[in-house]
Image 1 (cartoon, rainbow, N blue to C red):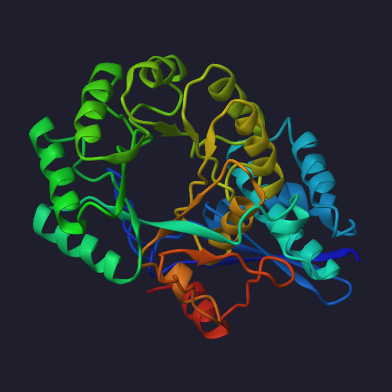
Image 2 (image 1 turned 60 degrees about the horizontal axis):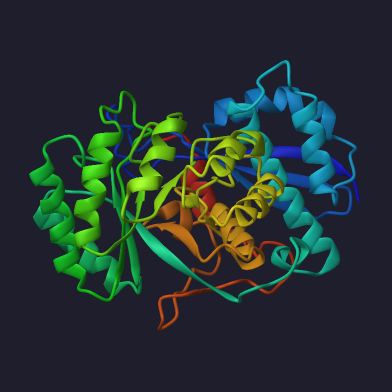
Length: 374
């Protein structure tokens, strides 16, 4: 089975607010789906957390290396792509594009063998995974309503972040966290994402350490990105002294970038984004490296239905994983699949057991969300 064509599908028109200082408009394109076509008619699907223009630019480099390749050898092919792009775009948007191709190749391998991707990644440790609803902080009355709405949709864990958190005052930060905790009660897990990868993040170790102590008082499960993404020494210091787990890693690409964070003991939770870091092939290697350092894997997943499925299979196959991120609500998750995701009574998502990722597209939803918005 050989690769015959690579197609891309931009998603636009309903981009959820991201919390960035320079906010994107809904019609902007931040997510791109990848279709890998084969000579036997099978199509594999992948997802990139990168604009269509950048993915297509990267594919100008990658397509000649892909067309005619064997479609069921994802790790070899992805490593070939990484190795042959050292001189043009190592990491960054090129790695993001490779991520989408790699996920699609794992999907094809699963379809060709009749096996779920989780089994092909090494084995199924769990058949259900807890999703946490990913939300942005809002003014307290709005935040209260959105938290309660997410719980009503079945989520038993919520992550809140960005927007005003860390930008107004310590008192306001605590008001936001207290509002969320009161809204959902003691039995829903809460995580907090400071958004340290925002442009010109103003805080360092001392702010993060003091904020971590406040979060612990509200039984927050982990504190995510409290420092800029490259502040390795700050993370080492913070993890040593913070009274709750510290998480980071969503903007890093390729396993080599994650190694110092794990070897130096900089985090309790490592967060590769499967649609950015190099795909499932790289995320699996990062996960096993995390296990060797007693670090939990929680994939960053501010993405699409295809990305969520990839994260589900990865979490099922890795001993050190137990959550997936689920941006909620999001048309890029709910409206591009033929059958919606369903949380069970315990707030868990079942890992698909059919061949490949288990992605069945909704053609009408894809058509609506991929056409230019005027």
